Every structure is written in structure tokens, then in C-alpha cells.
Length: 350
Image (tube, rainbow, N blue to C red):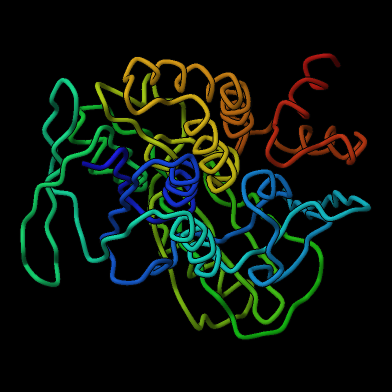
């Protein structure tokens, strides 16, 4: 019997597996795809806080960012810092790197393996899986089950927990070298924005929408920027606090738990932070410790998610221009891309 089965070999799932395996637990990762890191799920643009969760690795870094340029209406505002603000990571290499840490620590992995359901017992969970390559079904027993299986989480659905709100995101890479140190955001999308991220050897363009046609807005973006995509990716982006992310001997982490920044859609750092918190608070032999996990991750990120939701609510409203203008007058060194409270607090104290 395993101590922990983790569904999903993304950054959150592999981080979780790595830390539990480091603690001497027998861990199994279930990954529905045949290759870790594919298909590419998101941009991989993360703050420096990512290195609080994993050792620094220059090999996965494509570019280093020091500034952001926000285009609101006819005006543009630059927010620049002296030091590196964020990193543009190769998302596939990030996934492989964190998964490699888990494997080196002793975690096992089953590829091409999809969760079909699970059965709760008092002292364990029977996890039902299907191998898409061999066409074989199997039941594996574990003390605890972790759903790190993304926005459309099968674990969350099977638990009977409600889905979070969703954005529809789409992005592409363009074959053009760009090693500039500034990302750009255009607030011309209903209730969200479009973006440009310099990736060194290429450039990324993308956007996300709540409703309507992401494809139509994306085609407009490509036309405005006069670029032709070399690779196209799309997916769901969850946002908003869920009332609970655990039940019985099962818990969620990462996008599956909507541990995502509502105002940017980024979830890598939040998800990996919560995976670290889970490893520090959860005892696989004591399901009551899931309550400690619920409290701890909300204590760490709950206020930021609420503040991020407040900021997102300003997008596409007349308040957006004065908000960004106000932010541009603040000391950029005091603002943090993962902590919207660094903007909301000065705004409330104004």
C-alpha cells in the first residue's frame, strides 16, 4: 500500500510527491499523458518566489524580467525594478525538473494512466485507474490521495466538490528573438487582458476571457501585433476561493484547488507553495490533519486571492485607468506580482 498517490505530474503534483518522498513516504504519481510536461499547460512566467519551493535551476530559465508595461486605453505605464522580478521558464523543462526531484527522492510514476474513480474506506482509499496504452484497469490502495490534476480535476469532481469559476486562455509562440526584460499587458479584453512575454529565443502572445470567443479575440491580437504563431496552446484557468479542498482522505492542490492568482491567472507559485504547505501539515496516517492543511494554505494565500479578485473586478471598468495611474505613483519596489495586497492596502489607506 502507498502512503500517498498523487494524480498529476505538473509542478504542484511533483512538488508534493518530492516532499512526501523526502520524508520517507511511499509515493506514486499517476500521469495521464505519456510524457511529463506535455502538452504545455501555461506560460511558465513566475515570480522569484518559485525558488522558495525548489532549488534554483538556470537550465529551465529562458529569460529574466525586471519590468512590466501596462497598456490601458491610450496610455501606457511602466513598472520597473532594479533586480529581477520574475523568470520566464520553459514550462516543459520545469515539469520535468520537479518530477525529476520527486523521482530521485524515491517517488514512483505511472504514465498513460488515467484516474477513473476512487473508493473511500476508513483507513485507506482504493484508487481505480485505466492505462490508455495497455487498456488495462487496476485498483491501487493508498493511505491518502492528492488531486493535482488541473482545472478540470477528476478528483475534485469525484469528491463532489463544486467547480471554481473558469477563464478560457489561449497563447502562442512566435519565432522571433526577444531578450528584452519587460512583459506587456493590454487591458483590451473583457474582464481580463492580453499579454506579450519575451522568451529569449521566441515571443509569447496570449489572452484569457471569461465569456465569448477566445479565438476571435486571439485572432485580433495576432493581427494587431502582425505576427504568425509557430505553436498554439489553450486551456482553462480556474480562479476564486473554494470553500473546501479536502474530504475524508482526499485533498486537492494547485489548479485543482483553484490555488491561482485571480488577477493574472498564474498558478504555478501558488500551487507549489500549497504543495509545500501540504507536506508540512498533513500526516497520511491522520486524516484529521487535512483541516490543518486547509487552515494553513488559506492563512498563507487567502487574503491574496481575495485581494486579487478585487483587482480583477476592476478590469474593463472606468476605475481601471485611475487604478493603474495610482499604482504607477507608488514605489515599484514595494509592489509584488504574487501579492496584490501590496497594491490594495495602499489604495485602502489613501
